[in-house]
Image (cartoon, rainbow, N blue to C red; front, side, top):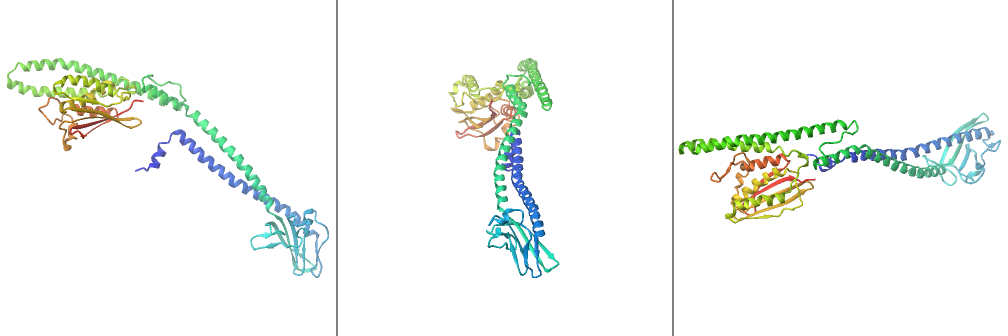
Length: 444
């Protein structure tokens, strides 16, 4: 099963996905630029410095002389005055086994090394060049060092780094802002479609507008065609159901009246098939009605009002039993169900409660989340045994044959709720009777 993080990621909106991808990409690019650019600048400056040191090395090599005893001397002064300024950061030294000649900038210090790095007069790390010269008059090599303090280059790179991060930050947020505006502009047709679908669901429109970008236009056309086709099918189904109901009502009434004129044995023989025919007609007409309302996307009904209206009729039918119905539903809440279908579902559940309740019927609701409500109808009657709760939802199931009915009520409620993406659950009530919980979608 996917974990919670995977579920949250899958639920991300398109806008969030695009912006998140842009943030990840921009962050990676900015970090890469912030790391690589200073290194490249540093390497460039070091290479340039080594090129300059190479010039000094050539100049020094041309001016260097050694006699037969290894005594070193310069025939001319080097061009860069920093060699003559103490602790200037630019140094040279020439060394033989018997003599050491060095720039005035070293003062009384020597160029030293620890095996990895070379250091100057103030023990500053140097960028350096090293070479060995051989003269005909002197057999031993002359080892020459030319080096310059590395710290000014590091300081330059650090200052450049500070400015670079400011530029990269401005570039980062600027590009991110442009991307967010681009995403917002690109997704605007989808936002408009969402608003139109909401208006379609509320019944304020009958179709979506046709002016959409070419990438979205085919989807809009298919949605419009689907809505039109679905509404036509629903209207046709309702008409057929109504026509069938009226066409069969009169012949069945005639047959029942004719059967009543026959002898008792013949009545008993024919009554059962007639009841079965009536049961099948009621069942299939109920299923035909479950297709929903003509404008299925905009239907809504108020359960509190429908409970009050239905209970007024049942209070008259069951007046001699002195039953009390407590309606605790919020009068402001509405569900996405056609009012006729809601009456059908609530009517069957209330009829069952009135039929079996001893004295009290309680109707209350619980909002499960932002778009679903669970309407509960429970009574203090005998209830249904736990092992038979699932059976009563089957078509034609009746636990008490002595009580009038076809056994289709709860089954029709269950299938009608399913057609509205809802559910019907039966459990035992804390009041002792049956607890029917009808879950439906809240109207937006």
